[in-house]
Image (cartoon, rainbow, N blue to C red; front, side, top):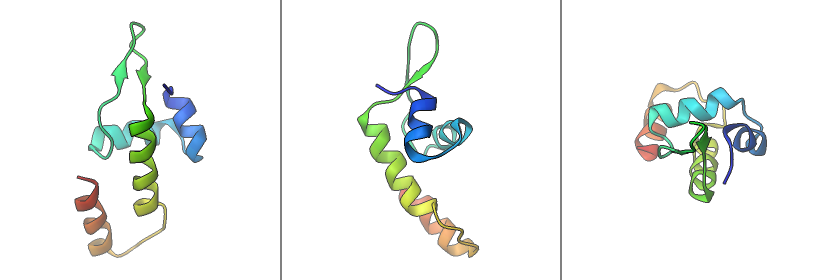
Amino acid sequence: MYTTKQLAVRFGLHPNTIRLYERLGYISPADRGENRYRYFSDLHVLQVSVCRSIFGYPFFNRLIRACGNEVMY
């Protein structure tokens, strides 16, 4: 299990980016502990990895970005 910060550090992202991916539906909702912290599994690691493969490059073409969104949904 990974916290938001641990998952973000693993991919070199800001923790808010992980929260954004969850809010946008790019990754599945995280389980929450009794302290209400998010806890991510190995499935989330895979989902973020796929997401970074698609959105990790500075594409400026709206069509390419839209296709990436379709893949993630």
